[in-house]
Length: 209
Ligand SMILES: [Zn+2]
Image 1 (tube, rainbow, N blue to C red):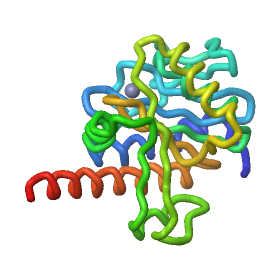
Image 2 (image 1 turned 135 degrees about the horizontal axis):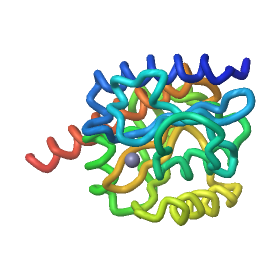
Image 3 (image 1 turned 180 degrees about the vertical axis):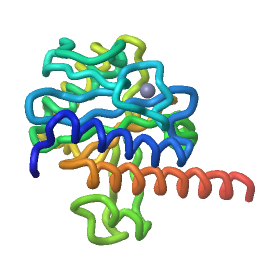
Image 4 (image 1 turned 45 degrees about the vertical axis):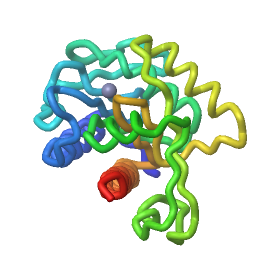
């Protein structure tokens, strides 16, 4: 992909934030977004409504998380964004959301993986061509020590049988969706959120029977 400069990255994230905010997936200043730009990582500063971002809501950090410039404080969750970029050079955008579906479903599932098959919308995720395939998204226990959580994620994906694609869930917390560019990441986010919402509805209906 064409690597963006920081101003292009900021413009992309403002537009994505507006769309994500309208979906209700970043309540109460929750969530955070980032893009791998040409000479740094552009990340959202903490404490802002991610649905109403402006040019002053961003920082540039290096791969170690050191602030190069910008305003405010990077989110503590920046460490997890940087781990995802470190794990794959193909990752150019990370969108972290706190939707009801991702929060509840990741608590309801006791295991370490969200797996589904049978949904046409699995095809919204890169590499999937059939509803008959099984889609798996890893779930990690939440941790207020983000550096430790980032290390757990690094360790998990250092196992080659664990494929880093589309997103990861943090239990009782939310989703980190990622992709090779902002448009693909948005599609992964929307596709996964749709599947989470479907599974939540299915589980509720089956429990009521
Ligand atoms: Zn979060």
